[in-house]
Length: 399
Image 1 (cartoon, rainbow, N blue to C red):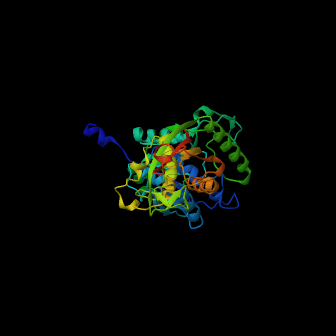
Image 2 (tube, rainbow, N blue to C red; image 1 turned 135 degrees about the vertical axis):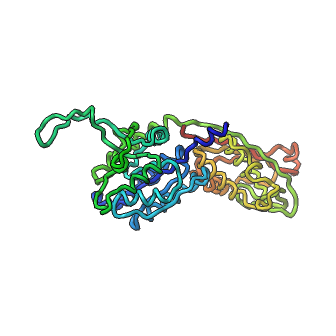
């Protein structure tokens, strides 16, 4: 890439406002669970593709809700190397925004109320793109109802009006300059950053909002939000991609080693030789899962040249793989596997192995199938020299 193009690349920070009192809701609305995600999680997830970092402004009352959201999103944030900082908000919205603005050095600040947790990635992208090109991008929609002036009852031309939403994205330096020009008394309360930006003499540019980008305010809103999020989930399911991967592994049987299969220690005079615990079944399943996700193989993720993996439980490796595929947007749907061994008899350990694998990948045991077969005394497995495991895994990904 030419050097001048590299210089044009602007960094973007998402500023999420989570310091409100939720007075009209009657309880902390940022703790509400919408199909497993809180408003903070839903909001932050919409900004990950277009931003380099985030700053969340909270209050002492909402701090625990912020920490909960970050804990839940930690695997994805780590995968993306996406830093998130927390700052304390102020008494007014503009105070919270200012505290967040001074906590980042990004070129562009995209400010969003977490109460608008129906926000989509498309709306975020439009707002930020407008700010990069024009200095500001205020997500907005035109009113559709007939509007009248309360003073004289005259109809107001709705084609000349816009309803402002968030995100509102700005050139951060320009917005900080606007904040520096606020009235010295600090008495004026601005309802959004667009008003502050315009009060400093800047021209506002608008980006596409949505009629569904509404604000969670009162208990009456909850059924509407749940219905819209369920509808979005159903639409997302229609975009699900199903993928399948295959895995195979073989290890030699030797004396003075424990025989570990599916995380279960099976009594036998020999065990499998390997750098880790040599759990051939779990290794095959890991390779099948990674293959379905096109994420390489077990040797790439956990090389036997690394002393950190010496003697490690393969179930621990499976749990790590589970976190990594989830961070990449994949979910394990099902596993079918077969262990090829002449001895010992393994049927009595099947369900314990299934449960271990299911727990490692955070799926139900019904999603894991394990079969055993003997090679009728043929080949190295039949002669008791080794064991082989083969597995097929199915994953799904939301496009």
